[in-house]
Image (cartoon, rainbow, N blue to C red; front, side, top):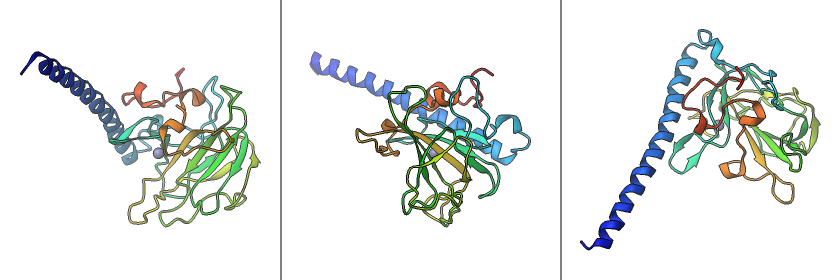
Length: 235
Ligand SMILES: [Zn+2]
């Protein structure tokens, strides 16, 4: 081997080691969160102090908490190689259709035709950066067969209807789109950016979403939380 080849191979080896370290680290923090979630789901009453309460608000934060339960997965958690979790998952610890979900901030609600378990709420002025518009997306509000738990006023086709913070939107469910393989009962919530025309961007891509931590006043970014229980920053 000539000197250039040796240098090239050394550089490649270092890159692989560093990349490996970071992907293992990401998977490990997701894994430790999974283990704690299982512990909580097995005994939610025993671990009541691990959970958050609907309509509470952390000191100084603009958003109220949307539902009661355990914050199981965070923004940026990685379950698959090429996909990072774009929101937070709050697990009820109850059966499907029981635990209510409320809006976190004043805004304008849209439910597209065909949306069984999801709604999205437009916030014209981001409370942290008032020059921009953001959206809050709520999903999994249906049973495993797609029977909706969304509140009656918000029928499919609802467009830009004003709802104040604290409005009952529906109930946590376990709809995944595949009735044979439902999710655990939880709410998935994400904060989504607008495009230049004021429409919401594709929620499935993390680059179209925002770190929810400053909006809720909690450590909800996976990079900054190695498996700690999620509570208000000041606690
Ligand atoms: Zn989720």
